[in-house]
Length: 377
Figure 1 (cartoon, rainbow, N blue to C red):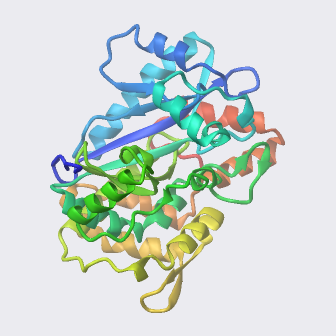
Figure 2: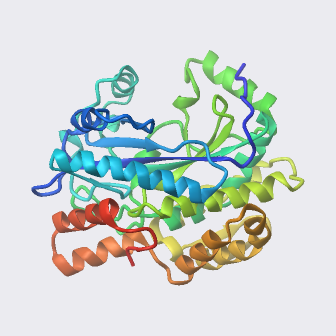
């Protein structure tokens, strides 16, 4: 039986996967070991570790209740990473996918779990050289985590549109706002959590999957949102890594406000019908971003993603006030009203320069040196 370790409700943690780049043509480089060695020459106490291939590194924040404190920590981590990378003549960047790297040139990081993933999934493991933001939200118990996971599924298109930063993949414009999620979709246990109603039912499902030999732990589920029982959280895994250091905090604030509303309301039991439009709405957000159309199966209607997102932000004003997130709510509203998109910015840089190397150079400079509040648009 999976034990859900209670955590403080509505606390937050963020993980960000970052690109490691050479400074010649800004392709990915196998620099994770050298960068980690340089970083760890200083006493820092931050969570900085390798990821599945050697052109990636992951950073994680501590547990926060105040998103402003979270931003302070991310800025401190950035300062450490940038100073270490400069000593090695390396670049770092946000973004959901590297625009022109070739997956077959990547190398699996020498860690037991990553080798097991490579053996199981073959070439998909190297194709998983994509970069995401994960958001953890504290929950008081397993039943609340199941409830929150289902609740947030309705808002997955919002998180996709707000974070989309991977329009280019393998040297071509995919015409998607986020191409990263196509790599995630290839895994057999991707998608969404089944329609269990509580933690007991979730455990029954997990035991069944384990007895069938399909999973060994929660890490084997590549769902868009999943309970994380060892942390006592729900984990949103759908976001591209943004191009700036500030946007991850805005996304975390949005998740915190939604969770505040969910955990304070009475929720009906989950019905399979709620997921009839899940994949379609997810695709609309991936392909069209703010211009996507969302379908509500409950009342047989459609609404533009931008309008739906603005309506939701307006409804969250009481939660923003309760959490002290008014500044973040206002910033999110302005971003949506102006249709500010990392993917659109990347495309504009390419249109202006004609060079994907220049695109990556610009996004690297932005992640490493831009001050908070300086957006890409």
